[in-house]
View 1 (cartoon, rainbow, N blue to C red):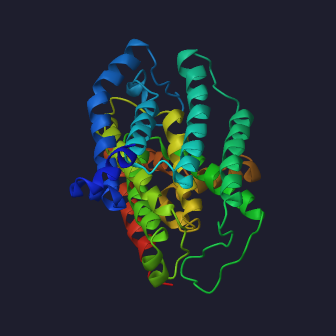
View 2 (cartoon, one colour):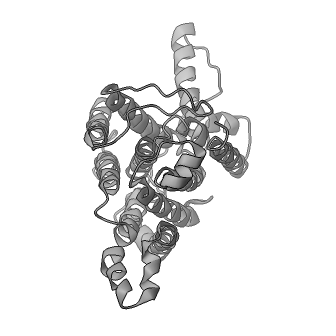
View 3 (cartoon, helix red, strand yellow):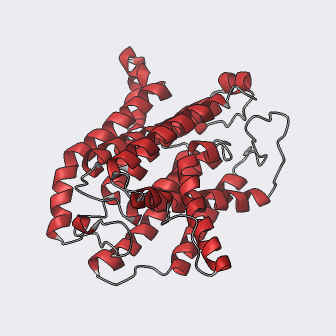
Length: 358
């Protein structure tokens, strides 16, 4: 919005020329989303507490009963801040921006309905797993179909470290993209089990994809680094900037001891946004490295369930996801969270190196 209002004034006031630069607008998207979260956070928490929307804590598992009743559905604050910052600083004529809004907004609605049924209507369960998965697939398929139909969009797969290997998936890219988006969404959701864990890792991953989006959308840099050039994808670095700012702003309140939880209304759209930007920037498989923490958390659940069913009751971990296993080993919650953040940062740095190691 500001880009469209102020950049045309460049011919009269040269100072407004800064609005043409993606880097400038990305920085201010970070600041805007951060300030919105910090400013609105206390009011939002009071409103949620007044509505008695408190987190239900299972009796099975680590001793988190003290957290019962903590306000939840903080994803409304996160996604609201992201949307406001993106609308202010994005070039709203950009195709990829609206695909991001579609994907993030669609998963936001799925998470909102699920949380609303469980937390506000006080049902034992929100949406059924089947219904939730169905609508996730519908939204992801719509986003991926739009990308597939967009003129010039490349359906070849980018494989980290292997510049000469790039298989063309054709229409199968839609199926692949759906798997990436839905998988990432649920992976972030599974990771959201300790104060600050998922939102801190999300901030790290979003910074990384700010870099990937800028590189993919810059013809000279992408050519130099031999990565797929995606015309217009640079604007997604601004959306990623908004994700970074909102994540850091929410972490202010979500750090241990958390004053509010994000709920499915936060974790599902955040994961979907990360998956969508990975698909749009042609850095889909790099997400396995960038979001390696989310991947390991998800695999820990899959392996635990598989072994339990195959062996008739045996477990690989004391409890899944992985962060609960370490809690069962008597690690302090803060220690687990910070160490997982460190792992996320290391993986992010390694993933950025793949731009050069090709």
